[in-house]
Image (cartoon, rainbow, N blue to C red):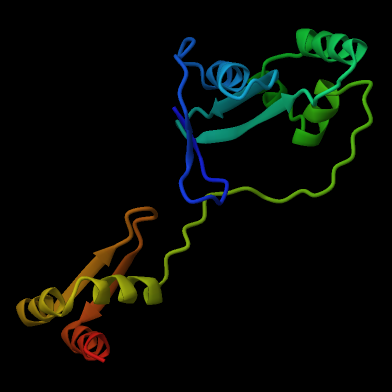
Length: 176
């Protein structure tokens, strides 16, 4: 199942049967069956000897309406001679190099590049708002029962500590 939020009232949900559990192949099938967009996709993760992720990457190519058969043939020939995504990453190819290999013979313009990484957007202020949203009764109970309280972000595991006085201050804000 793929769920897309394109800014409408409700997200769009599409469901297709899994091909074999390989994410790239299953995504390719999803695009072909659910969205009727001929697509090719490759993904790869290279795991280091200490079980950490050494590198990861992927690409997705979709045919535009009105594409010429000769362009489809050229793209299919490029895809047939590509190594696996993991092999290309292991050789040190940049994502731009990989895209150039996928689209060899086509004009490629990179309009923008940006670093991708896991970054949690939590902050003390957001945690304070979450505590206030628990309601006055729960916040008062928390302040009365514990000298110090901890809230752990469920995404990044950062711990936010609140003293009884800080919780009581939040309670004051919650009652305004």
